[in-house]
Length: 148
Image 1: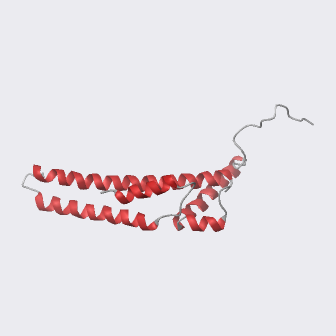
Image 2: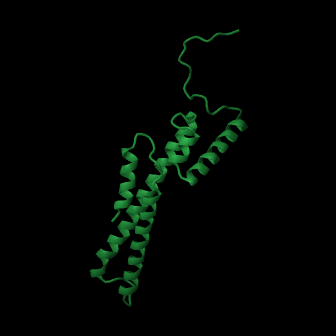
């Protein structure tokens, strides 16, 4: 119950920077969600009484399946948000950790599309404001500025 999603997060946490996208575990988590949903739906359909409420003896099982679905969804969302935040950070710093060949090995196709669109939006925003958003956000460390 939620083990596949947990494994995704542990893999992400144990890596130095960004592990390759684990499509296998993501699909397994989605399949587990679908199985829990089907089981939940079957129990609801089979146990409803005339007042539309499930009997008390069925409620713990319903709660267990619902919490398993929620946990898997939360783990999948956390996995994808953490990956996208690291990729956005790379765009903001000018791709210091990887090059395009390495990018293909650690990211999914959807992540590459996201990076391309994010970089395009960022470039357009900077151009419309007249700023180079790739420059450092911190002021210069020098105390004196040379004036001509």
